[in-house]
Image 1: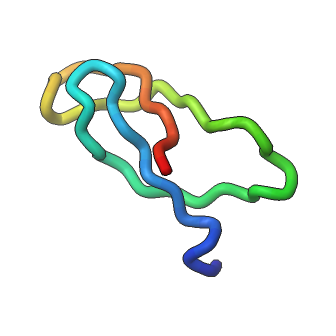
Image 2 (image 1 turned 90 degrees about the horizontal axis):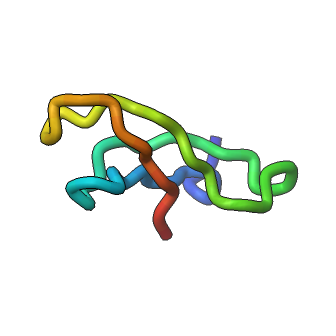
Image 3 (image 1 turned 120 degrees about the vertical axis):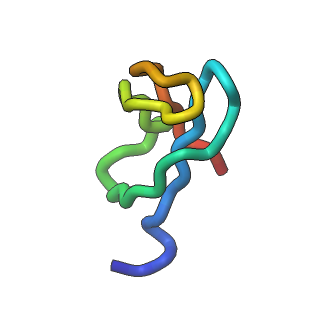
Length: 51
């Protein structure tokens, strides 16, 4: 995997970057949104893709 496919996931509640993941940018044009566990909020929150 190249660095071009690497994205950062940011918590929508506390606005901290918690996760790094890969995305196929040819098939997924819109921004990724996943429910993940935030260690700062200590609960499952929505995480959105950042630049």
